[in-house]
Length: 364
Image (cartoon, rainbow, N blue to C red; front, side, top):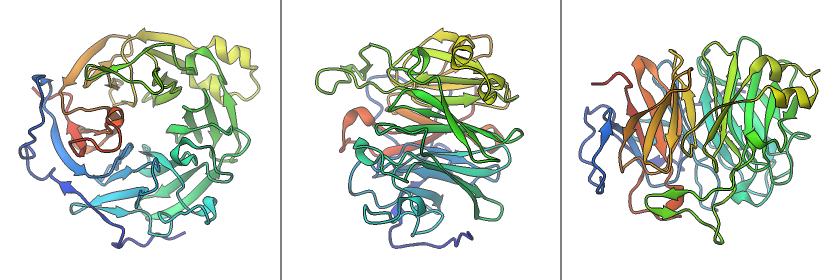
């Protein structure tokens, strides 16, 4: 399917600021003095976004999950200060009357792989009200051609309460790895043959921990308890040998060899035995590896970003009150790392806009 890049009526206005070093004044710093590397503001949005992806050429994509009924755009490219529906208006115009296999029902994340292709993960569970039949899917876009080159539906591997959350792709071996934060487990997709299977289904490593999260001084509660958000953040090492993952409602980071996940002949018990605990750190939403093998994690309880070395050493990268629920990461060109703020703990009407930041880990 050829993509036609043009502007539509549903475009969201953004404040795109990356061209101005320092990004202008942002005043809601709060009582917490910033620590670590400086943050640069790239864009602000009046709508809640979660995922971000950056191409090698510097194109920026964001996604807006359908957690309410007034989401005008699901996937957008940030162009000249506007969120332009991507790939077109039709894919972003889903209603409950439409075919969910041909439109975005509830996009949770976007990711650009090392070959420059954009992957769009549609959880297919709008408002967390249950999976819409035919909606969960992964879409592959060739950004060089601006063309959809693959659609991978998920049927048997999703449950009624599944919420496919994040994705990483091994382009050399034709495998995609996904987390399910609604029903604990991982999904392994063969992008060549199109088949998929669940692993670590209900395992302790993919299941939310029995903890209370405290964010910006307040316990994050629904009906008196912290929501149980299962396997969420996911990251693939640069050599593709290991997959790191963590439940959002949890503080334990795990890893597993990807050769174990790729082997469909292994019994589940063997897969479970291959899971290793990396460390007990902080509650994390998103994570990403840079090309040097350093893992970056959002720290939602600390308004912070931490790094984790391959030896398991955790260090502060940045702490800033404006990192209000840091959500997803993307590694862009020239050493920049991008991160969104989703402000999930503040409900539907936070005082500050949703923001997209970037930072350089090697900044003085």
